[in-house]
Image 1 (spheres, rainbow, N blue to C red):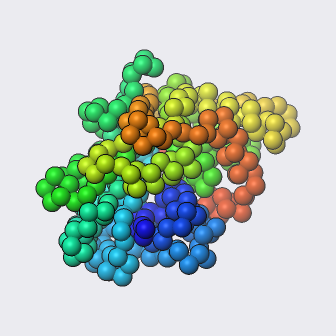
Image 2 (tube, rainbow, N blue to C red):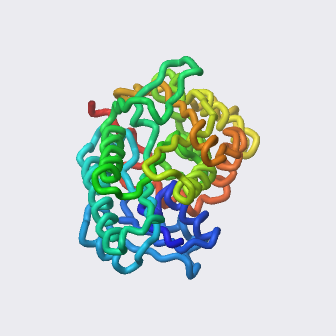
Length: 349
């Protein structure tokens, strides 16, 4: 199977690329190499004859048409997106242009390719989205997002992803394009760009800097190890039912404060800090505008229909993640110099 992966130099996309090549699939990695992308993420497979790279922007329809014509993919896995909520608060236009207009361009380029190829039944357009499109949940642990949860996005980022989800469903219903969709919970793991919570905490701790927690730290997220997510995504594109959506969650809910305390405890063991615990560096900062209280995924559909469930607990995953950052300073150090990294963003509301 030849897979076109958009955003394959990003965090989740690169995990998909590494796994797919490792399993013997041909992979074309299409990425614009914007600020959060890093080709080092795919270095383990970059020399494989199964791997090809195309620098292209999903906002550029002509470039997309060329890539489809040159490579003739059997499957599209569309992960390219602007994804940082705080950046969406400061600059929503980039999120609309990339996540909405870019997805429209991908759908049209894929539809043209599929039509020219005679509309093969096994072609798939897999759109990868987020649980943030569903809004915020109450504290009740019995209440979780399902595939039937109404959309209720609260940030420019989540609204742009909701819009892209609706476009994908419309292209299936209107044009018959064979699509599958997935909505995932918060990912973490190796190669996570150092502006998101877990890498920020690890790297600030190592530098002896304050560990910033929004509000009182009570916001709850469902944490999904990125390699588990990549496994689920390949399973959906191979075996998911056309027109169907699947929620992918780690079944690992933690408050932000509990998560940070766990990271501090791991670092205390692995890289002890002179003068006390890393938890002494925890600092509460002004909350993010419109900060959703809780996300939690019910992965019952993907478990029942496709047999998937997460293999990594949050404790195991955090141990592996911390060790990876300790071992890979040469990867993360240069990224800290990129625009906005290490700065507090999303305070302009």
